[in-house]
Structures are given as C-alpha cells and as structure tokens.
Image 1 (cartoon, rainbow, N blue to C red):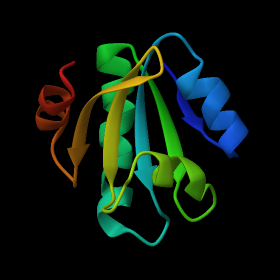
Image 2: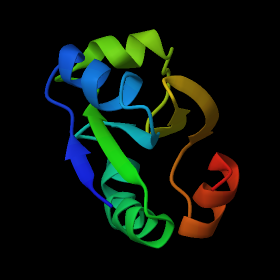
Image 3: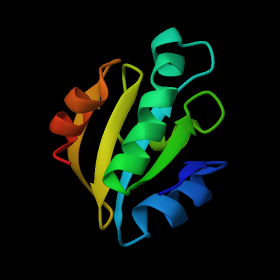
Length: 103
C-alpha cells in the first residue's frame, strides 16, 4: 500500500481516524536514530501486509502524539475504523513488528 506523511492534525483525522480502514501509524522524529532505522522496515510492512502506513513527525504535528499518549518513539499503532487495536514501541525487525501489531 502507501506510506503517507501526515502534515497536520486535520490530516491525521482524515487519513487515520476517519479512514474507515486499517492503518499503521508511525510516531517518529527526524533526530531519532531508531526511528530512521525503521523506515525500510515500514516500507516492507506496507508492501508485505498491503496496509497504509501514516508517518507522524511528533515535532511537526504533536497533537496526535498527545492524543495517543506517546511517550517514547518510535511508536507504532494499528488503527482500525478510528480505534487503536495494537501498539508497539521501539526499533524491531519486520516480523516482530507485524506480530505485535497483530498483522
């Protein structure tokens, strides 16, 4: 599927909360080494599991991170029909991330 960069809180609402589909949200920051290490894993996840990944830079768009009480990054949420279904925190291999998110 797609990798989408979330540009604003309204964009997050439209693309994640109101999307009516399963979406993986990646809360990250440009200064975070483990976050950058996860970029290729997320591309692989999107392709292998045919799911949209929405990337939220917590420095540029902090509201969704506050809404989901993100206190450590990278943090990944599986959102289904606007509801969080699973969460994973930290850098990990593709298989571990998919398992923790229930994909």
